[in-house]
Length: 171
Length: 151
Image (cartoon, rainbow over all chains, first blue to last red; front, side, top):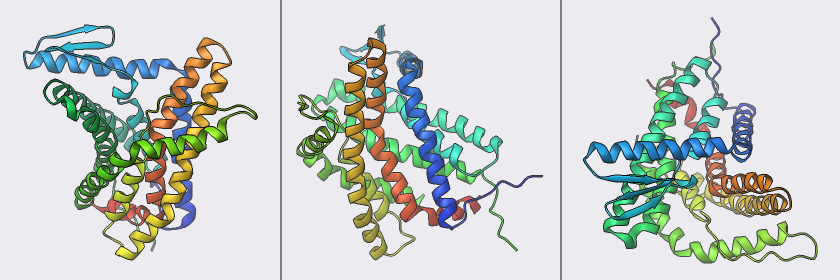
């Protein structure tokens, strides 16, 4: 059975990993620019999830195009509200990391779910702030997008790393 | 887990000064980037800016300071080595985004739309990707094999 390779401490393997990461990331950026369906799918999924979440707690919600009306607040879900960018970064790291394809697939699925749920929670929080603490909105929006998303991606990656088998030391 | 908690703490602390200097910082970066991206003899006038700079620098600082497996001296050296590179990445990625948008605007409506999406992608997250990459190269890589062993 083929043993998946692990990153060593050598510069070569580290650089190779980084080059792969940036190559996948570049490919993802090109794809996002070229195919608008990626962005549309991300915002559509976010809209659908938010509608389900509001209905689950008995909150009236109306959707017109990409705008949600909740308790007097109108929120337009734009590309920044979609989880596709954080997921593509996460995907680039998972694909670049030396592991078996089965483990990578597991990581991509786990990451997709975790990042999507975090993103939905982020938008719900922002809608709440928009309704009740409007003056905090800009600050919270940037904070949750930058710091929150980075933490989420790191945490999901760390969780995925724990599913990997122990590293084999050379004899 | 400890690393993630420290990262959250440092990132939150670093966010505050980043927030305070964001506007003048973004204008300064945009001024340099627009000079690089503008065709010879032309001047780009930036009316409105919606960038996430310098929050990527704050994230990088937080990543370095949360790296408790190395001594403080190495953490600060990593900060000193990485920040200038990341500032260049900010300028470079904004220049690429501006150049892509100008090129797209000169073509069809579809080309303009594609260029806009590409530019937004570059502006929004390249700084964060570069911050994570720089941290990994300078400090984080020492932690990865250990993490892979932990079950």
